[in-house]
Length: 249
Image (cartoon, rainbow, N blue to C red; front, side, top):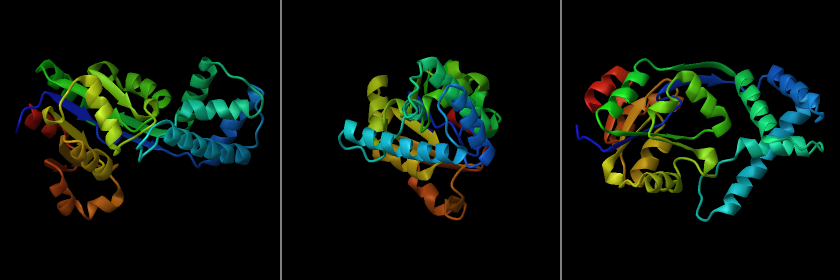
């Protein structure tokens, strides 16, 4: 396999296995109690509706703020801030962080690294390659999870969609990452488990790609893998990061 100067990785479904459930009534009761303790009183049902409306409003803001955005991303910090301010509570940054992280913990039922993920990242960097994270995610959710998983310091750079108002597969997200890293697309390999976001998006930006059909890949892709894999430079059916490590190194 060609040796690349830089390796970009998706996070959830590629390096880490996660399951979240934001529809559980208990989650919204918990969040309503948390906001009420700060003076922002909602019923659980009212809060869930306001949450969805705030996300839609922030996506609309992201669309207005940049030209040519096709896949806008909301910023969860702005969403929580608007929920407080709608009830005449003016939260500081610390309260926003605490609320977001409490929400994420309460909605997450499972989070772990896939076997071999840490070794893969470590060995790539020790071999002189650059390693980057490119994730459709929320900074307030993902940053503490990277610390908890023990991989925060294994990247040369971390690109999270909520920071940019745009997400994969939007070409703008890939171009922003390449520009900030000072890299040419031809020098890079993008590895991910989502055909549209990680593979077709990266390919449109000029990167070579490695498609992993993992347990978090969209279900319908299991039936179309043989066709889908032709869209990627390389592919792997099933999660086996030890194998990926051997062939990348």
